[in-house]
Structures are given as structure tokens and as C-alpha cells.
Image 1: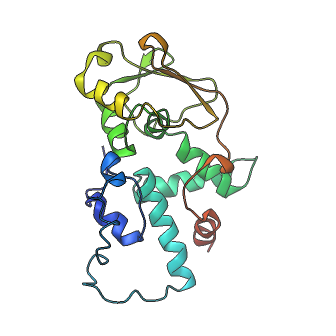
Image 2 (image 1 turned 90 degrees about the horizontal axis):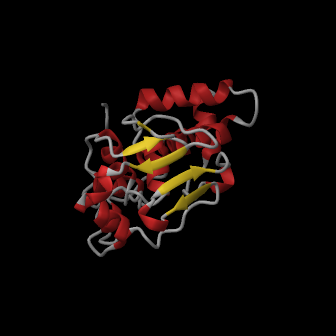
Length: 211
């Protein structure tokens, strides 16, 4: 399973904003952005003004880091988005990223970060429509049901995660059932660009790949 090995906090410092890659730590005083540490490798030097290409590249890097996707897979997602007959390429790209299983698990509140969701999915803690799926990049469709496996519900780690994320709001395109220890999420509709609450200028990514 390919994944980025760059330290999470270093990625946030490089983008000069929180990417929420470390779960609860991102909301605490331990956050690297809160401490206002310098950019990686700059040792406190002034940040240079980015060129148009630089801004486009930074948006792509930011999107990759938000969703934990590497370069080749991100490029494949862009090609997939561009080939869709309906919708704009940018909107389609964000919909694809949002419907990754690890992201949906995170959005449902079954993990405190996308990185944690990716790990939990890989370890086989979730089912999709009753069948175990351990592929983080699995794309969820409208009507799919994502549930925590029965055995996993007794895990101390899973219980701690669910307790810490209990008050987390769930996007309107998802419905979650927590009654009677059920912990099942349903994709009631595919997400639109308006449902994405991330500080991304998607048009810059499209411009970069359109060159």
C-alpha cells in the first residue's frame, strides 16, 4: 500500500495552514501551525511570492495531502474526472476524492483523521454493503452502507475514537445511525463541490493539468 511518509506536521507547516492530518492534536496547542514554526528548510526566511505555476502546484500538493493521495493516483483521479460526461472536471475530481472509503469513514466520525481512517480500513474494521473492504481507495457509490464490523465494535481503540468524535457533524450527503451500537453510515447522495469544506481552489488544479 503506497502512502506518504513525510511527517504530517511538516506537511501542514509547508502549506501554512492546518491540514488536520493528526486528529485531536490538530485542535490542541501542540499543533505545529499554532506554534508558528518556520517553513521546512527555510529556517525562518521570508516566504517568496509564488508564480502562477507555483500557486497551481501548491493547490495540487495541498489536495494530495488533505486526502493522503500520492502523485500517480492523483493524476489517475484527474483523468477519471476529465472523462466523465457530466459535471465539470474540478467538481468531478473533488467528488472522487470525497467518495474514497477512507474519507467517508472519516466523514462519518468513525476515525479522527483521514490517516487513521486509512489505517483502520486497511486493518479490515469496516464493511461496505455487508462485505469486508480493506482498500482505502475503494470508491463509494450512492446508496452504499458503511458499517463497523461487529467484532471491531468491542475494540478499545474503536470505542475511544467513537467517543472522541461523537459530537462531530456529519456532511448532509451522509447519514449515520449510532442507535443501539449500530454505527452504520449510508451515502444518501453523491457529494457536490459545495459539500467540500476544505480551503482548496480547485480551478487552479484544473489549470495545472490543462497545460
